[in-house]
Image (cartoon, rainbow, N blue to C red; front, side, top):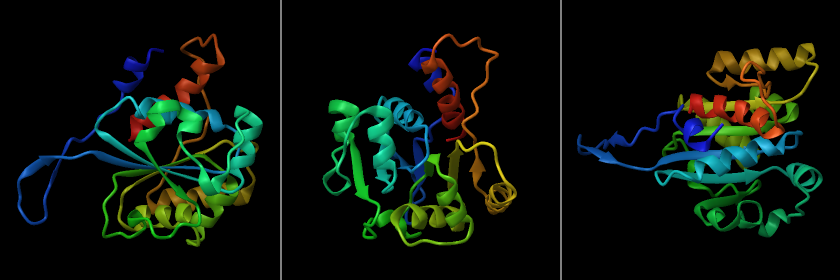
Length: 211
């Protein structure tokens, strides 16, 4: 699918109302993206590539400790989380991404008082999913997910695990009940994909459709 077609499947809100002055103003959509230690790093890479094409989106990115191992294994890019530069994965356009180390609890969006529009954890490991379901918030990824739930903001989790056991399913049910969107990385085939990229785009399109 062409990028323009993919991007046409989701709507971005370009205005909000100030709590002080009830006048609509244009603002950037703020999206927090987290990559955790599950196979399927290519989904996150493609999602961010498409979002970077939009001038009215502000992207903040955090990577879990284990995700660095997956990035090296699946994308053949070795990164140092302590001094990671998004340009290492996304080229010059990566300058538009604000990176936060997973232990950095000084980011303003981990407070419910600071607005962001949505969080996407892609791929989402079962360990991360379980911690969110259990209310843990001892790193920036878990805390932001907790804020998204309590502030009723969009939280999209993209697990890739299969098969699923009872505990996995129970945790997914808990999070769905709490307001999260569980969006498994399960590509369809009715669009007759001919490449791996088309399969990846199918899943990424579904994420974009829910932002």
